[in-house]
Structure formats: C-alpha cells, structure tokens
Amino acid sequence: MPFPFVLPTTSSISFTDYFSSSTHPSLPNCATTARGVVRDVLKRYKRIPPGSQASNLSTVLSALQEYIPYLFALDAGLSGTSCAGEEIDLVLVKELEVEWRSTLSATVPGREPTRVKLKSLESELFFALSTLAYVYSLQARAQLHTLYNATLPTPEQRATAITAAMKHFLDANAIYKFLVNRAQQWHAQPAAVDITSPVLGALAELTLAEATLITVLKDDPYPAAVVEDRNKNSKDWMFKSVEIPKVRAHLFARLCLSSAEHAAKAQAMLGRSSKVDDSFTKYIDDFRRTARGKACRFLGVDAELAGKTGDGIAWLRGAQKELGFSAIDADEEKKKSGLSKLKKEWAEKREDKKEGRVVDMLLKKWEKMNDTISVQVVPSSSQLLSAMPSGREYHTPKPYIIPTLEEDAIIRMRAPPDPGDAFEGEEDDSADEDERSAGAPVGAFPGTKAEYSANTSYY
Image 1: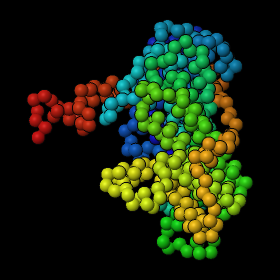
Image 2: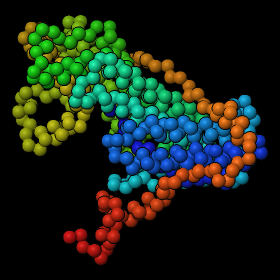
Image 3: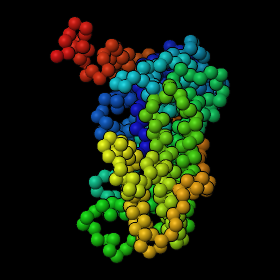
Image 4: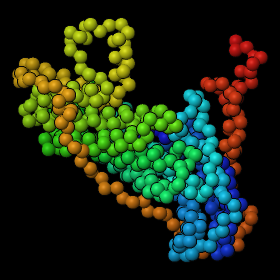
C-alpha cells in the first residue's frame, strides 16, 4: 500500500498585510479567503478519525485547487508575467511570513512535528503544491485499498481502481517534478525538510515507481491464485491452473525492475539524512525490495514456462532474499529453535505478506514438481540476481499545467476590496495545539498534562 502521508496544517495569515495591487486591488483579499478555506479544511481533516479521512479527501482537493491559482496569480504579479492574459501590478509591502507544520521531518515518537516558520511566497506555494500531491497519493491509496477488502472486486472494478490510482500517482509526480525544477533557482534550502530539493526529488521518483509497479497489478493473476489456494472450499485447482503468457511475464519483470530503480534513486536522494521521518525512508526501502522481489518472481515464471524449472526455483529463492528472508532447508530448519526461530518468524511477518505468499506458493509447487518429475539442477540465486535485465519504462510523465484564474475572476478583482470580505479561517490556530501539547510527557493522553507534574504520583 502507498505511504500514508499526513497532511500538514498551517497558521492564519492575511495577504493584504504583505501585498498591494493597483491594477487588481482585490487580489490579496481573494487569496486570503481561499487560503482561509484551505486552512480550515486541513484542520478539520486532521481531526477526522483515520478510517473516515479517505472520504474527505475530495473536500481537501477542491479547496487546494481553488486556492493554488491565486498563489500563481500573486507570483505572476511579483515576477512581472501575465495571468490569464492580464498584467498584474503587485507590490511587496513586507516579506511574507507563514508557518506550516512539517509532516515528513524526524520527530520524537509520540510528539507532533513542530511548526516551521517560513518566509517568501515561494515557500507558501511549495507547501500548498506538495500538500496537493500528498492528497493525490492518498487518493491512490484509497483506490488500491478497495482491492484488499473482504469481498473480492470484479475484474472491472479492479481495473477501474488501478487505472484511477495510476492517474493519481502521475498527477502527484507532475507536481513534484515541477517543484524540483523550480527549486533549482534557489540559493539556499528552506527550513522545512518537506520542501527541500532532496525530499521533493525522492517524492518524484517514488510516485513514478508506484505508478509503474501497479501497471502489473491489473494483469497479475498470481495474488488471486493465492487467495483461491488458501480457500479450502475452492476446487478450481483440480481442473485448471494459472496461465500467463511467456512474453508478458518477462515484460512484467522489467517493469518491476524499472519501479525498483526509481525507488533506489529516491533512496539515494534521501541518503542517510536524520532530518527525514524514519518511517518514510523505511517505506521506500521496503517498496524497492518488494519491486525487486516481484521482478524475480516473474523471471522465475518466465523460466518455468520455458521448461527451466531449476532456474525458476532459483529465481524464487532470489525473490525471498530480496523480500528479506531466505529459504532454509529442512535440516537447518530443524536446528532452529527458541529465540532465533522467533526472530526469523517476526522478520518474515514484517515483509510484504501478499508477495511472500505468492512466492511461497510457487516455490512449494515447483520444488515438488522438480523433485518428482523434472529433476533439474537448481543454480545459485546469487548468480541469477547479478545478471538481472534492465528495467523498462512504462509511463511518459506529463508536465504540470499551471492553473490560472478564470477571466471573469480576474476582471472582478479590478474592483476595490471590501475589508469585511477577507476570510482567514475560523478554526483554532496551530499555535494553540502546540501550547496544549508543550511539556506533556511522551505518550500522555491529551489534556492530562497536569496529572504528570513533578508533585503528582503516577499511581
């Protein structure tokens, strides 16, 4: 499943304090109102129970899509470029100061990341766009989540969900690519790790990796075969087996390898930075391993279809290594006991269970067949892994199209502003949340800070 991004929240500001326009005097007011809606929507989304957040993503998406064109209009006014065919004269009264809560930065377990004070319209634009990209990734996650419900989806429902998820990933990728290219103009990296060049570059590679990997999900019959194999009431195994064209098996392997290569690039961009949330870096590493494990499995299928059962078994054992656990022969397994065996089982449970089950099912089947019928030599999986083919790209990412305000909206902003029209948001400011949690022990229940004072007994 895609990474469960946490959407950031932000402080309230009024653009009228920082910008003025002689040609479109209502622009700062309108931008303030649109931002106030985004601020409130993000805060309400944060308070929704996690199980219900997916159904509210469309509301967040709509608010961001309404707000971002105003940011580009302000940016056009500062840079002297046209907006919807009109020149906007915008004067900077004073440098913009805004606060956003960093959600990808490393923090103490049990504590929320701190708010980061940022300056310039550029930082505001980057945070708004990156939040929009998070929403797209979360929408993709919600689509793919439907594939793992208790009720198996129909082939049509499965194809629709995967197609929608793929589009969301590519939309997010276009935004990150745009931000990476724009960040090349910076002389220094921002204070918030979320919008630094390495993180944005890693996110661009990761979204492309995810969009590539799910291309094989729609036509991969093996996960469904595992479900049938685990279904004690199913008798399909008695009269039919999984079929997959030989050419597509090799193609799927190369697509998985391309996905793994993009994930490896994302991993390299983040490096060993201690500023990035550890769960995010672990997710990228797990994703890379899973993609390579899938590639090994498809290469094994390709070999087995060609009558090379021994090579197929070696590829599956290589898949186990990529996923983080290796096959252990019966004699060695008997020697395992106590804590060492417990550690092995715990490590296996952390891996992608679904891919591990597919590999395990095929491995048992092929080993039994090879022991009784084929009797082929099983080569070293390490040799095969060192000679894996190159990845194959599937997507041609499209550029991000900068959204612009409608012509009638630009015309209306020529009128003088009504001071009472600006809306900065009605939700509590983020600072209030920080004050409530400041000084509370790690793991303390909200609102119980007083119960943990120095003069209070825990019991």
